Image 1 (cartoon, rainbow, N blue to C red):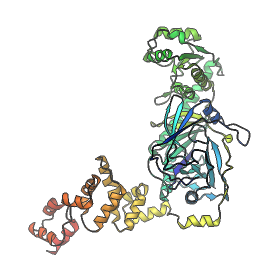
Image 2 (image 1 turned 180 degrees about the horizontal axis):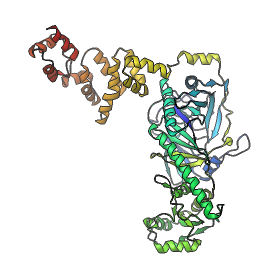
Image 3 (image 1 turned 30 degrees about the vertical axis):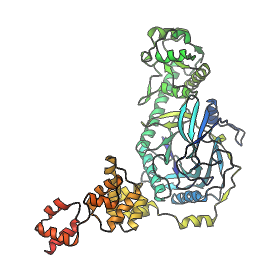
Length: 590
């Protein structure tokens, strides 16, 4: 088995081919509607993934925002020259991967007509080749580093129409693709984590949910290369890989069994019949509602598949689910098949027997049903038939599910997907350009790790290195705040407060540490001060109302004397107002 990885990371820069800021839409959106169609590549071919998307005949509605969109995102104005700041960040990341910059960057159009781009293509450009990620489990070669534009975000899909938000369209991404050198799911997780650290170490990438995505490529002997898109969580990336290996192994077993039953070759007649007459007066809610609204029930016999459609390929997913995923591309919600408990749909034994009679289903056969408008239902059954006829594992692009399984999206795209972008001039990678980003280049991961280990204990240094607060930590330490205090506040105190539904932002933390540096309160008071300012109080008000101002000088001496130098008694009464070190020093002087 082999694994490969593609990392897509948003860069902290304005949009790639215009001057719009990379931010969320804030104004009331305007709306426009489009349909998209596939086009021929430079080789005179049409990409099969684009053809399948076009067959869905979807209408696309786009939400357009005044604060972060312009005519470029609407495809009503030519793209502007490539954002040099984004290119520099991409080249810096490439350098950290020991990847060789190309001599000239050429932007390409990658055909995408699923609605995620108003133009029907995504702009992408390779900026470097080669490189590697080192690992005790085996180094992994980098294939390419590219810079590309982010797609539009899906808002909803309903009744043949998909709605997309254009606020994120055009945000610059860096795409890092590895060779298939990854040996196991555990190795995959390790490499994904290392690449994430390299990206975050620049301090020039976006952080937060949705700003980084991992695509996993999996292939096994006798199977096929499958790309699983959209893994957002390191916790599930190895599970995705494990489940894809199991899925392909189980599919190979299923194919072998069907061939054995069929005498060596899968042969399906594929005759689709209208079975609506079998459900006159039915009490099956799904079918009844469909028929009453003018839909039809179409079905098909699948020879030698009895018991096969119900075979599990992953937890909660069966071979019938594979056929259903293909049928869904026609616009239906799924299929009903004979290996299911038909009673859960309200289909009676008598209705089931009538279906078998109409379709001439024998004991060793199975059947599938679809309820939808006649044209849509016919396409859906044809798609299920297409998948059932495959005596091999198809090359697919699949979507990562939250449970670590995956679902079919489209065929794996081929070379016909790309053609040159004629509106954007090439960019030469000159020594001057390399020098300009090298001057402001950030420390490498190892340099940061070494620096942090001198400031913090090993465990906390590693946590901060992986933290989205790394850049803020560095800023506060530069301002003279104790490193361990900053780290424990950012990593532990904030986490504790979040569990209490207390939200603290960087502005509040900056004010907190500025007041702490002036000696206005002690470390132990930090959680209480943060609770107060998070509810809207100023630092001054929080300290006065909660009686958290630091006690020092003559007043502290008096407290020490009154308590007879009893450290435990003093801290029990004044823990949130006195510095234990100062108390200890005063007691020692007595």
